[in-house]
Image 1: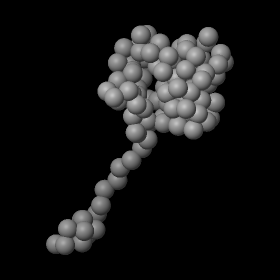
Image 2: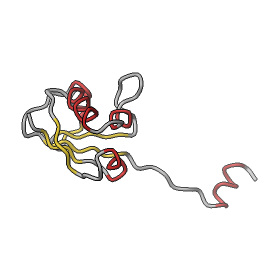
Image 3: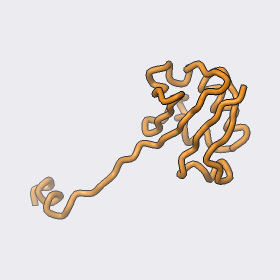
Length: 104
């Protein structure tokens, strides 16, 4: 079962720089295990020690968020396209906003 997985730049150090890799599995868990066997350390960046999808990682199966497809139990089929996207957060308060927030 060949499944195409698009890997974000931040995780490409685990795939030797490849932005697209192939894996196999009938569920997302099985696919991640297969990818981790080929690209050691990748699973730890996607799955928590408790066995859940990291809160700041979004995975899409054919453009559908896996959280609405059964999360790690989401069923996969040959030819599916998986996209891994890390959530982006950040920013900073300006000095005046931070001072106001702190009551300074």
